[in-house]
Amino acid sequence: QVQLVESGGGLVQPGDSQRLSCVASGGTFSQYDMGWFRQAPGKEREFVSVISRSGSTTRYADFVKGRFTISRDNALNTVFLQMHSLQSEDTAVYYCAARYAVLSNSLYVRGKEYAYWGQGTQVTVSS
Image (cartoon, rainbow, N blue to C red):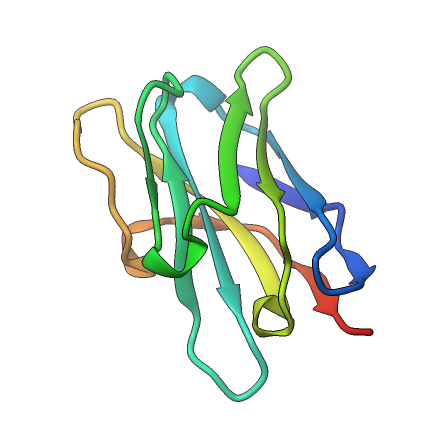
């Protein structure tokens, strides 16, 4: 059983940067693709980014537009989401998720493909 704990959320102003972290425990971190999703009030959860087990491959939602960078440190069992040029539309609860991927070379963007989820961290972008 993999446990995921996000941190790094909070209140920032438009144009600011913020880095989210997600620490995993209870599994072999390097066996999991790691994704970030978000859910804004009144909206469905949406895909943000995913990184492969080794960190060599990443994928982003179109709305990221080069503003976000996903990375991971397998030695620390941690995945990061560095966000720049934050806008009010980025306000949401951000969740990290893990997908066992030893037998897969594809990166998935649908939340239902991920078996493990963190509790989320709130990101609020407001002046």
